Length: 127
Image (tube, rainbow, N blue to C red; front, side, top):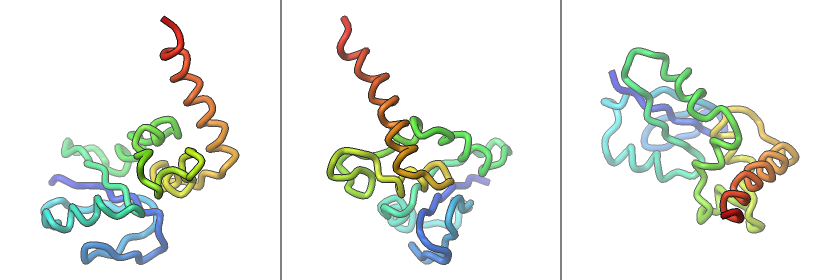
């Protein structure tokens, strides 16, 4: 059985594509979702859709493992999406909270973002 994990940052009972979602991870059997519904889920800025492997391992465990750190979450965000980044170029804490499955505050985000950017700068600046 192939599943997807829909990570919701919205309130309990949030509805999209004919389904109600709880905050955090929601496991959905892919065969119960039409292509149109899947597109609606992926387009919703309050939801993150992750493909879960069909190898018998817990989908929840794999989803959490796939986005454990803020650095991993930063890589999944779209800089052009205002739901993902602030006007000043910082990742939105709500988007990060959805991805890592726990509350991320601004101070934690700022510290992790500075470290993330510092790792990228030396590779570009040295040669």
